[in-house]
Image (cartoon, rainbow, N blue to C red; front, top):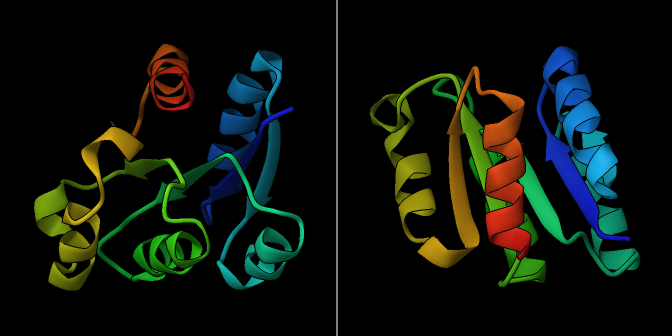
Length: 125
């Protein structure tokens, strides 16, 4: 069973993602910061996909991407945001722009379940 790490501080978003992805046979693990999952990520051999929130108010999503990709450079990522990329901190936008296009999908909140399913299927194959 493939596993998905969801990093978002909004519990409703996490529940929504879980409700969409678990019926696809994916194990969904959720956290609201990178400190919680990072140790397990290394110990347990990692996740197959990262679904992460990026916003203009903090760098936690972009920092999580950097940390987790250090451990697994081929980690596919679905980036979610309620704001346009132009509103992200310049440091975060720079980090994200350096990611390989074939390993990244973007979703702008709010997004329908089919958009999440399509992004996950595209990235995981």
